[in-house]
Amino acid sequence: MKYVDEFKDVKALQKILGRIREVIERMKKNGARFPLRIMEICGGQTHSILKYGIHEALPKEVEFIHGPGCPVCVTPIETIDLALAIAKRSNVIFTSFGDMLRVPGSDENMFETKAKGADIRWVYSTLDAVQIAKENPEKEVVFFAIGFETTTAPIAAALDMAEKDGVKNFSLLTAMVKVPPALELLLSDEDCMIDGILAAGHVCTIMGYEEYIPLAEKYRVPIVVTGFQPAEILLGILRCLENLKEHKTEVSNAYEWMVQKEGNPEARKMIEKYFEVIDRKWRGIGTIPKSGFGLRLEYSRFDTEKKFSEMPNIPERKVNPHCGAVLQGKMKPCDCPFFGKECTQQHPIGALMVSDEGACAAYFQYGGLKK
Image (tube, rainbow, N blue to C red; front, side, top):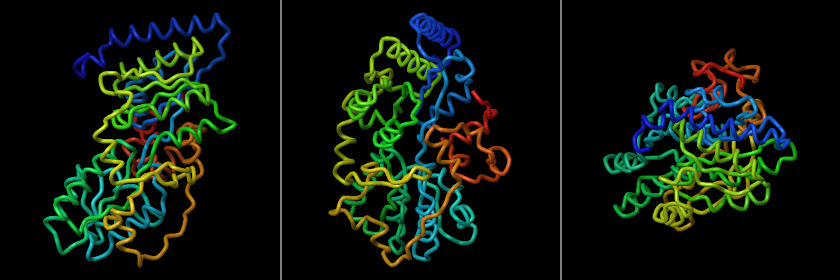
């Protein structure tokens, strides 16, 4: 398949669904337990599943569990409060990807803070933030560095540009996170009901999938790397079910045209140059050891929190406990008592309803179906 339309071709999709049904029937004959619960890691996959009705097209024996695959959604509320406090300073231009601007802090979001006079700018690229710093040498330009490993690579590229061009008024408010440690936390839960996992293809494009191999072996759960289009997701499900049928607890790559086992060596080298692995707090989950990226000591001059060390400590905030349950796959969005009532995309309570990759936003936008 070479073109986007081919990934949505009805005949191709029906063929894959037919193979999935065949595998399910063979598993029934072998006495398999149903439903089989498959967790997709990335919120982009969640949106595709709901948008294209993949959850409805699959046999009832397969159920999706939605993972914490949205970096906007897992950014702690106190980090957002800190971002807002920094953005309000008169000497700051605060830059961010667009999906962070509507995420509520304790009192307001970035759009509301911008309306009150803060210089907050939506950028499409990390390099745009460095360019803004070059054009405004009298201001401190802060980039809100959120994201999984996929985004960490271009964030490192921005630092590389700033370093080489001698840009001194650019810094990062870091909140980047790593997928495998969060996945291990979920799998180690005694109440875990995950039978198989669809790993995020874009993360693995950067990092490869070597880190997933010990997880699959330790927790005896097949992990399949897959993409985001309907055919790619269904192929990932098929590969996952085939591994379950054969009792194979291994990592499979169903995204071969994009992902190599070792990932992208140059991108990984860039990340390792500027960042080190640190403990990171995840909204609704808590602190996960070695689950984040922080600036290395030799590049601390790019650390926003060190540049603004006089900022008061932002207290830890309580969040809707149902958000944490959704993030951990323990609750479907439509089972939250606030979903579609107090919490809508027009008036969101939590980040899961705001972000373009949030599970609640997907359910709200595409019908809030329960399967």
